[in-house]
Image 1 (tube, rainbow, N blue to C red):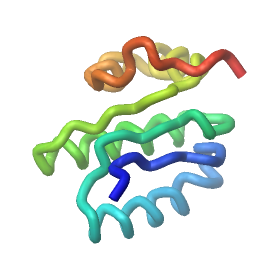
Image 2: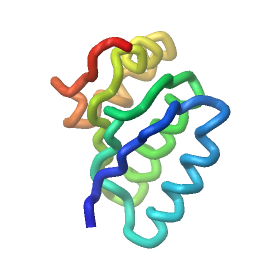
Image 3: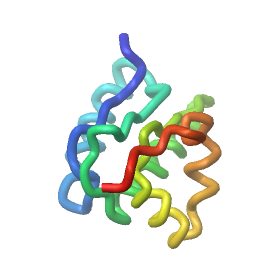
Length: 102
């Protein structure tokens, strides 16, 4: 089984609950993914950032690391504004894999 989850939608207040339910379903059957691929993600707001930080936290609690790949530059700016950059950058896949500005 592919251990990457591809996000193909916005991660906003209006979408994160549905995304969390979908990931919970997979997580319960296959365990935590190794990577969350944001190359297909649209807009990411503060709820989307909180969603990603929650997934990272869950993975750590289960003894795994969760990489965020293809993070849009807007996410990095939002994380910096919220003083959460280090939490996202603890993930090795962050380095050098940012998507272009949207």
